[in-house]
Image (cartoon, rainbow, N blue to C red):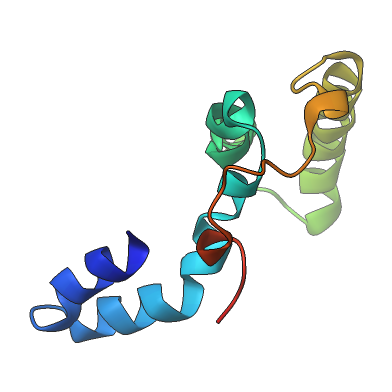
Length: 110
């Protein structure tokens, strides 16, 4: 499957094809986990939400006089976000065993 996709780009976009060939295993590592977890593992929604909040808070201030002032604003946000996610059950860790139905072609580096 992955090799067919890469081959489709080799002629038109050789740099992309080479990049995919070298990094495809990293990009699809989530396939080694049980299917119910794929959506949450492959998504960056949690990080995107945190980045959006950082942008919102820093935009209000505008310019920061020093690095410490940025840290005073953002460290509490990071600590609060971490505390919230520690209490949540994002995935069921008991079920995170290797899925025998996954083709090892997707999980091993060549």
